[in-house]
Amino acid sequence: MIARRHPSQNINRSIRRVSAIIVMLTLFGCGSIPKRLDQEPFPLSNPAFFDTLQAYMGAPILSGHRVRILLDGDEIFPAMLKAIREAKKSITFVTYVYWKGKIADAFADALAQRAQEGLPVYLLLDSQGAKTMEEQNVTKMQEAGVHFAWFRPAKWYKPFHYNYRTHRKVLVIDGRIGFTGGIGIGDEWLGHAEDKDHWRDTCVVVEGPVVHYLQAAFAENWMEATKTMPVGDLYFPPPQEVGPIKAQGVRSSPMESSSEVYMLYLLTIAASEHNLYITTAYFLPDGLLQDRLIEAAQRGVDVRVIVPGKYNDNYLLYQLSRNGYGRLLKAGVKIYEFQPTFMHAKTMVADHIWGTIGSTNFDNRSFTLNDEFNLNFQSREVAKRLEEIFFQDLERSRPISYAEWKKRPYRERFVGWLGDWIKKLL
Image 1 (cartoon, rainbow, N blue to C red):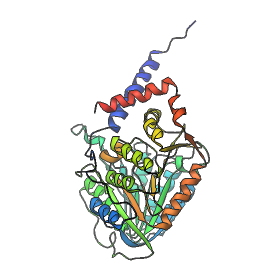
Image 2 (image 1 turned 90 degrees about the vertical axis):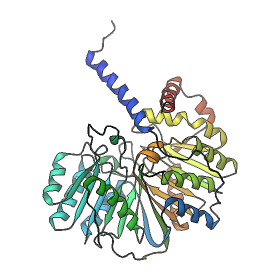
Image 3 (image 1 turned 135 degrees about the vertical axis):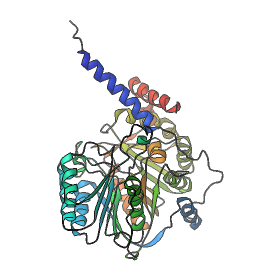
Image 4 (image 1 turned 60 degrees about the vertical axis):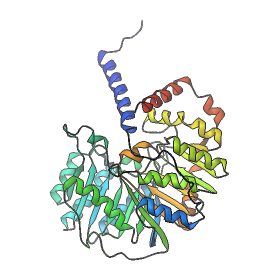
C-alpha cells in the first residue's frame, strides 16, 4: 500500500520550491557591470596597474599598516571580543549575520557592558541576514545604551528595496583598529572548521590609515538607516602609520554607477601573470569573468579556485555553481571543493604581491545588489600568508576534473539547468 502525503506536506514542499525560485530571482537581480574591457590592463608587475586600480576604486593604496590574518571562530571571535572590551573611545559594528546562540550572547553582553560604561557603541544589523536574532539580546543592548538600528527593514511601499542588502562585516574600535572578512555572529563559525557544524572563514584585523575607510563603510550604512552621522575624532582620529604594509579599502554599493568590487576582481584576473588563487562561498562568475579566468589559464597563469563541497548552506546555488564548472575546467582553470565543512571565506591572491579579504562572494548578488567591503593589500608578506592559507585549505579539498563533471547525475544537471534558465530571464 502506498502511503499518501498529508496535505500540509505538499503545501510545505510547494513553499520550499517557491522559496528556492525567489532565492534565485533575488540572487540574479539586475545591476550595472561592464560587458567587456576595451583595452588590456597593465600586468601586475607594472606599477601602472596599481595606479589604474586606485582610479577605478576611488580609493588610494595607503602606506603604514600592521595586519594580522585570522582563521575561523577560534581565532576571530576572541580577537574581536578582546578589542571590544579594551576599546577606549568608540565601537562601531555593521554585520549581515547576527543569529542566536552562545557567540551571539557573548557579543551582546560585551557590547552592552561597554555601553553601560559610557562608551559610544553603535550596532547596525541587516534586517534580512539577522532576522533570527533573539529579541532578548536586542533589548539587553538597547537598555544598556547601545545605539542600535536595522538596515532596510521590509516596507510594503518599497517592495524591491528589500532586495538590496548590506552584506558588510566591519567592526571598528576607536577609529584605529578595524576587522573585516566573511564571518557572521553565529555558532556555525565557532571552532576551527574541524567538522561539518563548524564553518571555515577568514578575517583580517588592520591598524593604520586605511581604518578610516572601514569606518566610512559603517557610517554610510548607518546614515541611511538612521539619518545621523558619526563624526569627529572619536570615530575618525588623525591617521597614523604603524607598520610597513600597503593597504586599500574598497566599499561597493548598488547605489553607485558601477560595482567597484566587480572591477577589482575583473582587473586583477586580467592583469595576473603567474598565479591567481580564489576562495569563495558562492562561485557564479558571469560571462566576462569566465572569459578572463579562461584567458588567464591559457596564458599560463596557475588559476585555482576553492569552493564549498557537499557541505553548503544552499543546495540550489551549489548545483547552479557546479553547472558552470565545465567551460572553466576544460580551459585549464582548476576547481576544488572543500570537504570538511562549509567554505565561507572570500579571498583572492595574485602574483605573490596583491591580495584581498572581504565580504564579497564571486556572484552577481555581491557585485550588483549588496553593499560590500574588501580590504586589499599590496604586500608580499600578506600575499605569502594568503597563499599559505590557500594551500592549507587545498589539502582538505577535492579536485574536480572535467571528465568527472561531464558524468554528474542527471538530477544535478537538471537543477543546475533550471537555475541557469531562471538567471537568463532576468
